[in-house]
Image 1 (cartoon, helix red, strand yellow):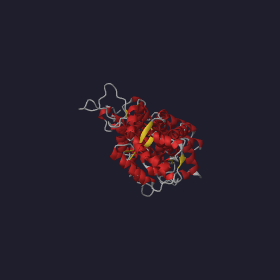
Image 2 (spheres, one colour):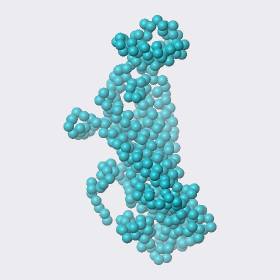
Image 3 (cartoon, helix red, strand yellow):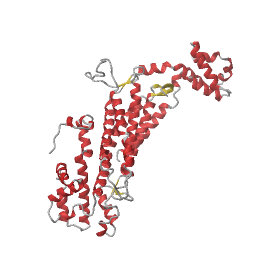
Length: 467
């Protein structure tokens, strides 16, 4: 039995990002090395069940094998692998050591190593998605929906290229991520359902199983059905890699949405903006040398995790390449996929914690809006002038903005002074005049759009929750 202090582990995922016990218990159930071998044992068990149904092996033999696989430990498999230098052969040996001579021949019957490995990997990623990834992301999605709904009418300056643009609402700002995260949750669900297995033998041509079954692909389908999986359309020694590639892409692209959200929230915490703030515990420290600082560490951590795990998608693309029916160039790299999943879950759980205590500074939101409040009317003025026939409205308003900056007068003060604009201004409707007088109302349908996004994902989450 190997026992180590977690702080002597090598991966930060173990000694830093899985320290919360409740999260660690969830992660290890699906993504640990113990879980990996457990899923492989499930595949071996499914194989024996169908062999018994097909009357290839006696029912009592199947019963014996099914009991034994429950007791195999990761430690004994690793100990056996020291001798075999082959992980699946070690797994098989451990099973055979525990069963009768009558049962031994039916362990791993007609299968090759990657029938077990690829099928087990697909099974655990599918179950991890259903039981852990999607529920965690839905929890975060609901938090964002609540925030967007609460702030749907809170007027905020829009920003493009780091510059003040025209007004939106803070709820509209958050609704972008409600939509983007929702789409990624949906995509993860779809791609997890497409994960495939195989029981097709050494090169995928059913050579061994065809010795016993006229339709070995039907035998394969029965074994996989025991696990809730389907077969790939054409396997070699391995399942077509695109199923896992597409699934991991859905995970990584979701990670990108979390990183973008975190980046935006981090910028909104800048000293000169300060529209939102992370909750700080009374003993929390922001800087080792500047006691006054309250750094946006959680948002920065999420972006930092994304920077670590996003490039690993390149490895998945490289793992699409396997010479002929298979080579071993993905044997090491493929084992790191669970780390990508844990990285995403760690980031999502961190955002759940920080959004549960998010502070919105309405005074600073209003102050920042006021900074360029007078220039906001430039866009509606130009568009309205053009709509009433002004031949060069954009240039006319551009010159007005320059004059406002130079003269110290506001744009709204200069507008009625310009005789060349009066004929157009007289045709403006009462509502159009009101918007020019009150730039806060120039938010388009930001609030209505926010409501629509929330309603859409309220309906969809009811479906996604059952994936």
